[in-house]
Amino acid sequence: MAGTPHGLTRFDQLMKTCLHGDGPARPFAQTLGRLMPPNPVHIANISHADVIQALDDLSQTMRATSNADGPADAGMTFLGQFVDHDITLDATSALGTRIDPATIPNVRTPSLDLDCVYGAGPEASNILYGEGEQEQFLMFGRQANPLDLARTCAGKALIGDPRNDENIIVAQVQGLFIQLHNILMSKVKEGDGAAADIKACAHDGIPKHVWHDHVKPKLESFEEVRRFIRLHYQWIVWHELLPAFVDRDCLDQALNDHLFGWDAPVMPVEFSGACYRFGHATTQFEYKLTEASAPLGLFNIMGFGARPPEGNLSMDMFFAHSHGPDPQKARPVGPKLGEPLFALPFVHDPIELADIGETLTVAQSQNLALRNMVRDRYTYQLASGQHVAARLGTPTVPVPDVLAHKGFKKTPLWFYALQEAEIHGHGKLTGAGGAIVATVFANLLKRDPTTVLHIPHFKPWGGFGGQPSCIAGIAAYVAEHRSHILHPEKLMCG
Image (cartoon, rainbow, N blue to C red; front, top):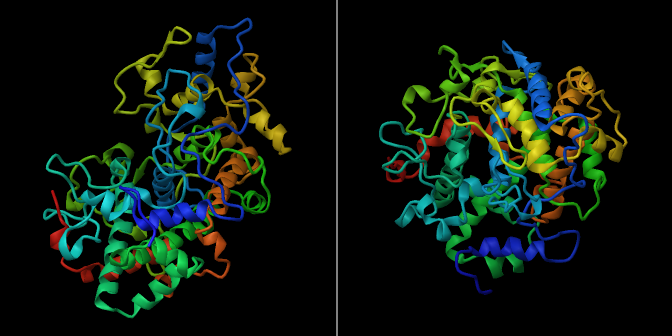
């Protein structure tokens, strides 16, 4: 059996072997990168203070003062946030400083592998797991709220990425996948009829000798459950999450073509710093956690602490269920943001732009729309929306009047992608923004030969059927079977 470097499970080594094997796979770079050359701010007959004021003025046109329903279920916004936390984490750059993306480590693995749930597995991330007979089960729940995340004595969530505790909705998407793992592990240990389906699915697409060489016998059931869940998660991302927010033509083209070349960076800043931030525009003012509850304002659902039982949500309020209430909806993708995002309550200090000798006011620093555009222009120096559209040959949209009247000829990429969605996309990303988002996800799935994309006959498991979507099917399955987790009380903490 092949040797295993300290800190890696043999399944992680299996992934590494596959990634470096024959065929189209390429190693995943652990830094960010660029799709297009840097586009610094050029000052002519204007000052940097004028640029910032113009961007602030543009941001003020984005204020939305009420909820608006788009085509996607409300839960898709938070599933999108969860996915973001699975594939990117820039813990190095800071708003207000210019930085070369190639020097920014991506702390998350840039693949749809659920490392935000599993960490590095039960050997290297054993703090996330139980002990004894449950050492392959994920910690979950507290005595005071069995549906909360497991927590330290300081109230910090025992999860693979702490950002998935930042609000109580994304925390419950995290909890959904943790519970699913524990349910399926219980069924495998009990020899339930589902065990054979899990095993067959997990081994699909991986040669028997590769699995044998890289999976420890004692971890075989764990790795089978993990791959079974990963494949369904990848299917959901491509077939449900992305179509909810991205034009179908963009997805089809990204799957069939290499729009930026095969050697383009796996995780470009045009994606992480601009286009995938479309999710900010889909956030509503307030949400009902259950059908009978009163709506809670966006910043009344904050996390990073023990969640009381009344903070538990009904998944059918966020993802359509066959016999559930009408789910809440996400906002359409477009150049409008809910007003709460213009006064972020956790920002208390002004942003200093040391390179240009400017400092934002506290109010400006709390303005998420302005923060996004300042990051675009001064931290990452991203290509404009018009530059990207010209590169791809997509229809252009005009510079917004607020900028055009001040002499601007180009539009920050983040705002441009939202404009495209409103003008050409019927509330979904299209054009340049749609191409970037679709291309990044298509590349993640193409480059990793263990993904669901390389199992063309894959269909979601029948146990998740009977619902309008696979993610709703998983939610319904978890709700029905969570009482069958083996000794859940032993997995509780905090």
